[in-house]
Picture 1: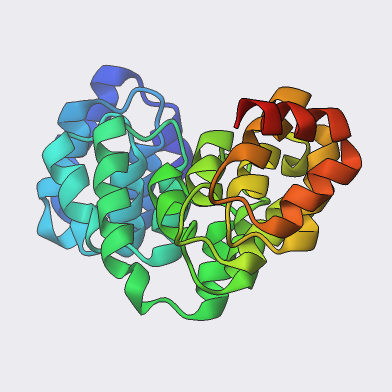
Picture 2: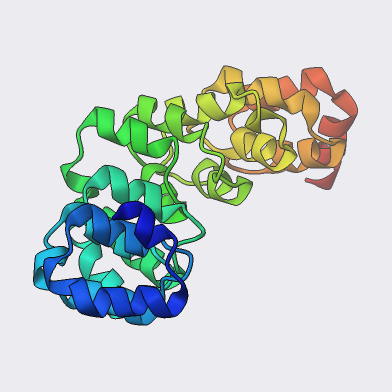
Length: 244
């Protein structure tokens, strides 16, 4: 039967569904949904059938299918497991509106996650969860987030310039093989009062003289960093003093 379904033409597929909808088995419904000629009308018929929609695999396939009417896809999102929601949230084949609903559902459930689940999710989550995990207090979650290919410099800058950042997070940014070379992040690390002072001092040599001069003259800059700037670049420090 499954082989026969795969060979059906568009018209034959629709006729087959009409004649057999009430007796379709789970694997047959999935085969129809996987057919290249599956249409919104076919997805709608399967989604409206309470018996078929009770199968988890069918619900999952309907949420992921681009031809599923949006109302049905959004409804079935609420019945999916966390792991499937995570996978679908970053699948560009899933319609944007459905992915937004998935992100909302994930954010609702995130407070119930264990540490292991947060670590695993941080490595591959979508943009919506990245913003949440940025301020997770556990350093292991942030370490995993730094490996997420969807993480952008703008998000890290929000953290690096925030008073909510922890010293551990700022030190992790400075030691990360990918992000530690970004100039804007290096400057933000120096200027954030929560950055461990040895970490902040190690970034000074990568900054321009103009920025070192501005940092030296900034009223919130610690005495320690001022002395480091003076030792590293006496001219920059002298220029800052002249401006003052």
